[in-house]
Image (tube, rainbow, N blue to C red):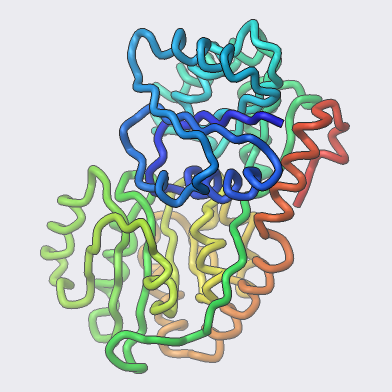
Length: 362
């Protein structure tokens, strides 16, 4: 089977990591192409060397160039990811015989008026071109069916997944075992609400903690300034974007995701896999992954007081911390392995008419 994946950019993000892991499994049995539209490509070097990679920049000729690529390659599957790639890719596929799939990774893009315009474009495209939409969580699927008006016959639920990696629990700690390492990994943008986490750290000045923030984004300068204003420079370190974050997960004790919206939250799976106690906001995606007080902790978005309370308990109670970490790891191994994900995705590719009951994988 010839499969073309089209994504807006191939930098370090949840959707990009999922696609990277998917492609590196698919290439074993198929011919796989990757096209990206923006010159952001940190993950390209992690792709299997057999993958055919192409950069087609955003311009007035993008749709034409995509059509020519599809025509020359003659794929059986065209699979798009993220808004620019979805819209341009689906439009360029009109008239092509390939089956077209679109993975929806979130319920919002910017959470502003532009989102409603994009939702309208999606609804029109789904009507013009028979597109099969794969949602990464139940909340995203509800959005696809109810807001984007996608036919339930062409809507599939397939939870995100990551590869298994052997991780030694509580190894190679920085400094000393009395210091609790807290980790955030993600883009420094409005969606992630990192300021909530910083306020919580400020409430815990007397605790022996260190927060490591891995990621970059338009709010980085603002967040660094806020760190100084809160007088927590000694407790917070910004390390920027990192291609390989394994060391940071390995050296942490607690992972925090304070987002105000998330389609899924693949970093939670990475934290589960690394046997970390996880705290996340009680919103759509994370609440499907975390069972409160069993395999993680949920708190109200933007409520730094609630986050402070939960963090303090984990900082001072290693038994609870280790219990949550162990249960999170079990959740990962039982439900969210990339091999199972790719097998289920291929079933959808082969028989897109599979009924709704059989196409919902969890």
